[in-house]
Length: 241
Image (cartoon, rainbow, N blue to C red; front, side, top):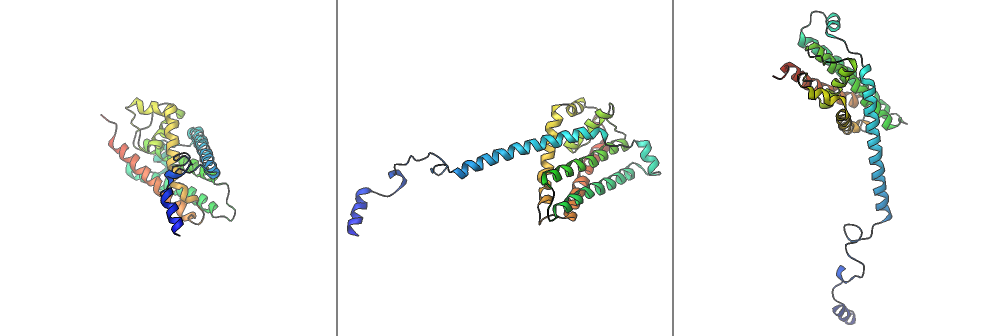
């Protein structure tokens, strides 16, 4: 033991500074990068590419379907719901939309609980596109009810309402910039951001053991009701001076 102690005294403390391995190369703690670290990095990059591709695909699908969403004008709504004032008619629209989005969420939630669920990206895309259609119809018809129809032809109005959906706000028809932004690359960028937000918000819906039809329906109903409140607040205020 005394000999060992003497040798230790001669060699000095056994710390990293006495090692011949270059300190600081490799990972944060000075160790050489492992194969598993490199594999993890490759997997993260691959997931990032798949996520961006998913967002682009869903955004383009929503843009493609938006002009085909059936929208009732004010005259048609008044015939279907005779005797209702503006707020009562808007309440009817919101009630129908929240029920519709809840139905979409319940369907996806039930599918995720199957013993062999369908491919989750496909289910998630179907939910986002389905709910977007319900909420686009709601936004467009609320603008009709409050006398704030977006200008332009059917496609231009659809893109304007899609821009309102991405911002979760009503359209200010007196500000051309808000309409122009809905017609180009800005719309796609905002749409991808909105899809990502909804995806992250709804991912728990698609996690087995945490989801079911009731959970999916509840979360979608809450999201649609919140959107309706914000849009109606903007529409009640009227055009900006």
